[in-house]
Amino acid sequence: MKTLILAGGLGTRLRPFTFTIPKPLLPIGEKSILELLIEKLRIQGFTDIILAVGYKANMIEAYFGDGKQFGVDISYVHEEERLGTAGPIWLAKKLLFKESDFLLMNGDIYTNISFNKLVEFHLGVSAVLTIAIRKHFYQSSYGEIRMDIDSGVIKNIVEKPTQSSFINAGIYVVNTGILHTIASGSVTMGMTGLIEMLIKKGSKVVGYLFANTWYAMDDLKNMDDLNKLDNLNRLELK
Image 1: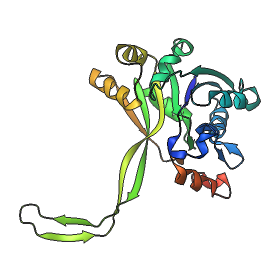
Image 2: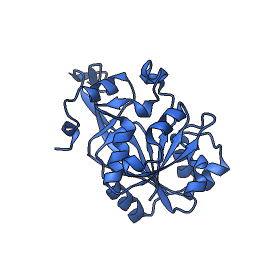
Image 3: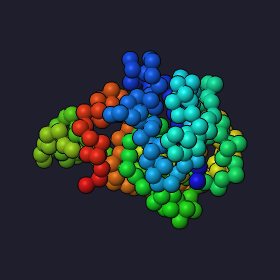
Image 4: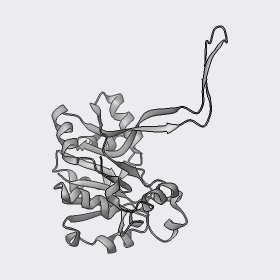
């Protein structure tokens, strides 16, 4: 199964580093975040990779080349203008049209998810799109008032409670039939827009909940947290 990795973003929240280095090449330890992702894919048998590049594409292509030195085969598609997170799927259509399904993911992720189990789940439920989902815990910045709305009587106050929500992990398995959906709308769109279009059409969109380690290098704090680790093995699921 082919894997399309989105590696064309500007990385504005990681400036000033991304003024000179594209986000996928920012280092985590001795390797770039994208190299670590490709390594995880290769270990699990996903060696046919397409990189959707845009910002500082020449640096990414110079680093990875055809992928042989990393044990994979890499092809490229180029964003000449900003297409959102779903637009590059359309750019890669000639490389994907012979596939029934493909992996799609952001290029700024460190994870120990089993891509094989994700694909197996997707194929088993015959979904058009499967979204890898993580449970995210966060602490509220405020005390939570619990009260009876009708009487106004306060029952108790919980100081800065820990809350949780399900989040999109930026990893998908996609049926190539969605190319028709993209063609019928705007080629420039985000994944959220594409998912909403599919749901409105009645297409089967499902979530795959996983508990493996997952980090997205979204901002300077995330980058700093990853680089403070003495050894990436500390990220492994206990």
